[in-house]
Length: 321
Image (tube, rainbow, N blue to C red; front, side, top):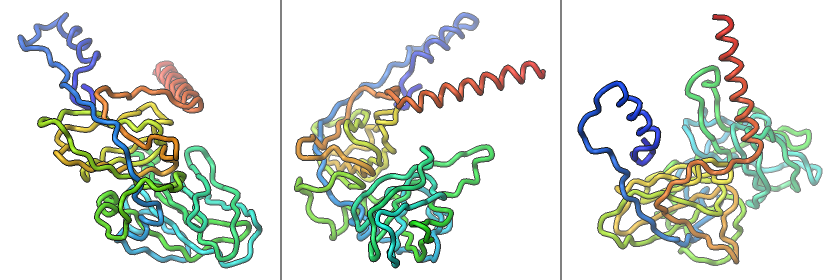
């Protein structure tokens, strides 16, 4: 069955195989449920990372050295690590975060500078930075392994951070709440939604309110053409994380029961929103899922190597048996 509960081709293949040996029940075959399309819906910029920090409603945790997600009792999602540069440094200088788990977004004086990534083995970045600058590293926990030796995998920043040759100290850790969509919408500190020019690079929260013009909503799929990486919410319910450029999943399943007559959709874009002067800044709900989209070439090669290792392991086990 699919994520929407619809029968797939494999269901019918298995049913036909079983029918060659056993009688099948005299029941009608299951049919896919009808879906709906809505949109495109224009999104409106609500706030950036600094706005989330101001409105999070969570107290920051102070420590001389960085603390992990587990140290501050933060299970998943995002956490901001903040410190000030108190010494004269080379400009530019190399920032190194070898203990990053898993993805880090670098800001200097509230300006987005770039990405570090455990997955891509990138743990350092060259920064234009000076004494007195504010450094923020927004860290994303990209998930945990549930079995095997990788289960003890702390998240956040789990070792020293250096700038040039100096270890950076005196950090503030601010866990970003999992209901950040509600916090942003309800905060009196967030300005009214508008389409005024803003920096589309780095984290941004985008909101749209729309009325559903059907009396009986149907299941659908959220599609974020042009968006890069982030989280999506509908009426306070998390729809999941999106990363269409990485693939292969492009759409997010949305059950019909999540809709109301008047709806609010929130997109928390982490990297780059398609909301420049000549871009649409929109999302759509579509009737067809896309879960087998293209993937980057390096991901294809990793999958090929993984399948080869599995095959070699199977052959080795057969020989030893």
